[in-house]
Image (tube, rainbow, N blue to C red; front, side, top):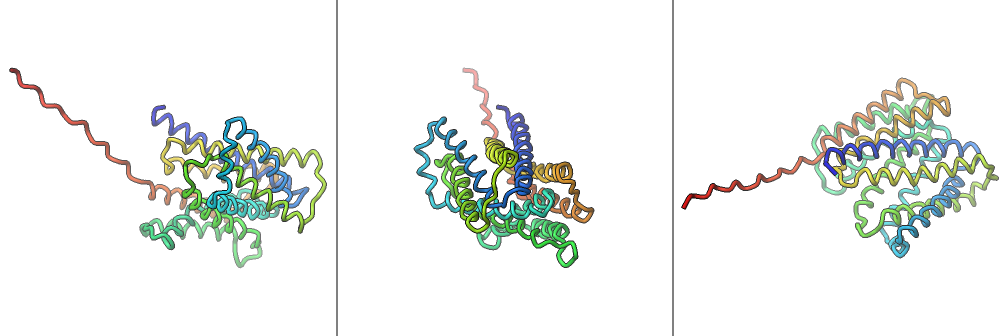
Length: 303
C-alpha cells in the first residue's frame, strides 16, 4: 500500500476507533443508571472475554494464552482495569465530554514522567504545553468553586494510570499477540468487578441493561482493534493526534443522550488540553530519516 494511502487509512481508523471508544463510554453511562460500576465491569468483562476466546480459537492462537501470565502483561492489565473503574465511577455524575477531555492529558503526563524519572529531555516549549494542558484540567475541574466535584479527580487518576499502562505496553514483547493482551486486560477488569460486587452488591439485570452491556463489550473490543490497526505500518506521531476525536464525539453524545453541554469555561479547558496535546505530539515527532541518494554511475569510456 502506498504511504499516503496507508496514512489516510490509519487516520480514518483512529478517528473511527476513538469515536467507538466514546460510544463505549456512553453505553457504560447508560448502564450505570441501573447497576453499580463494578457490576458493569464484571458483566461486560464476561461478554468481551467469551468473544475474545472465540476469536483466539478461530485464529488458532489459543496456545498463546500462556503469555497472559507474563508479568508485564498482568501489570498492564491491572493498570488498565484501574483506568476503567476510575473512569466509569467518574461518569456516574460527570459529563462524558468533561471526563474524556481530562483523561486526554495522559500523553502530557507520559512525557513529564519520562523526563522526571527516565532521563528523557524535552524543550521549554514542551514543558509549557504540559502546564497549559493541566491549566485546561483546572478549568474543567474548577477547584475552589461551588462547581467543583471531587469525582472530576478520578479521570485525572485514570490519566496517570494510562501513562503507566503505556510505559508497560512498550516493554511487552512482539511475540505476545494483541488479542492475548486484550483478553488479560478484560479478565483482570472482570475480576475487579466481581470483587467489588462483594462490597457494592448487585442489582437484577433486565434486557435493556443487558443490551447496554452487550453494546459496551462490542464497542470496547472494536475500539481496541481499530486503534491498533491504525498504528500498523504508520508513524505513531502522525496517527496519535486523531485520538482527540474521542473528545468531540463524547461532547456530542453527552449533549444528545444526556442533555449535558459543557459550560464556556469547560469548553475553554477542553480546547487547551487538545491544543497542548497536539502541540506536544508535533514537537515530539521524530525528524524524517534522510534517504541516501543512489550512487551515480560514471559513463563508461569507449574502448
